[in-house]
Length: 316
Image (cartoon, rainbow, N blue to C red; front, top):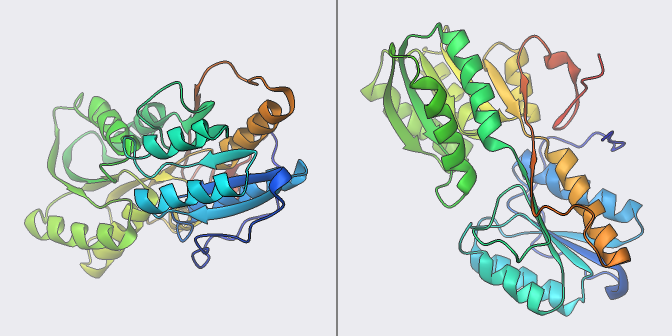
């Protein structure tokens, strides 16, 4: 699916929790996690631009991982008589109630990026193929490190199923190499600052590691900062996941070995188009509730094909 979006800025100040209520007869409410992270910012902006292109009013709000805030934002969407909600859920289990509330109010919900642990509620769940992406990244990581040495892992938010799926994907590949030894694993909740501090502590306890594999780019970038500060970055293999603009810059600089691009710009657009189809026709555009979108590897060989935030040109 070809995107026609203008290039989205990589970093922005966090959006307010609620945009001004738009015309209730044509509103699509978009609820993301935390738009101070360029991944979630892109998700919200692409969804909003697509909704507006299709003739809807649209607003973007952020729950920042808090289920109470998420519930309040769903209440606002219900009050504003939204035609549909595009939701990146705060918690695989904890967001089920908010989705149920919307559905009971007659508002279709289209989930993006992170799953909820109940099927049959959302009209669709559009997510990256995290298992495929994790295996793709892990294989590149093994090749870069030479199949041997000690390493550490940075794990995402435990409330997000994606964190465990990616970690399992790494494990499936890396355990096939008996000369690789994982020395530590720390939870850093998708956050750059936490990635920095957890990397500091792991490095202190394991000064001879050769690599770091990370569940997302923000944690990997935090780890790079800690490794730089300790004078340990040279020769270190660091792998990321998301395909953020900052991560791509780090690949270009030779600091990040690779990042796995999540096609967030594609599935955020697709979710809105599916919502529009349902609103217009009263039927699903795609029969399957859970829809997986394959990830792509970005490394020094193709980094120049990164044309916009979370967009890789594969035409050449």
